[in-house]
Image 1: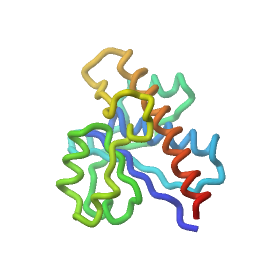
Image 2: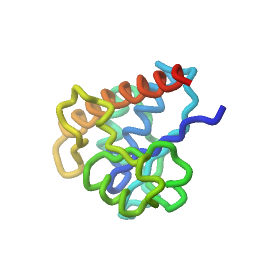
Image 3: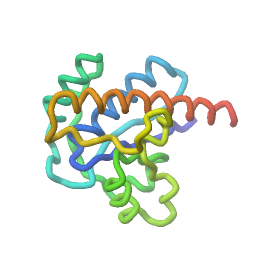
Image 4: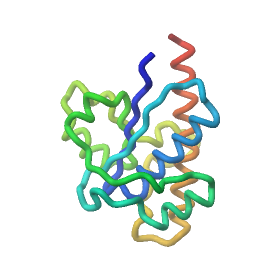
Length: 161
């Protein structure tokens, strides 16, 4: 059985999307080990290609038990729209950029990540890059909620087939 391939996307791929990659990977392994998933992250801009995630994001994630140390920033590539089953944008700007770049046949795979966190009362994961340390905690709260919602969605889909 082919794994569900998921790509998390933000602007520079050093804060939000690598956090989502680490959180979802950890929660999927812990809470849904039977689900076969392949997880990556990317950015819509090439500002930080090859860089490790932001040190503040790594520290906040580490405090909650998530490891991002092996990740490196990359930019979205045309082949990503063919490969990934779900391409999850952190905010509307990323979503718009992805929809512009995606072939029309892939638009249904591009979604806002927080659609999977209906209790969050927001649809965008805010960019913590220029904010204070509390921003990284808020990002983690939202990403954990959306990750659990996505896991429920994937488990429900697996049961339906």
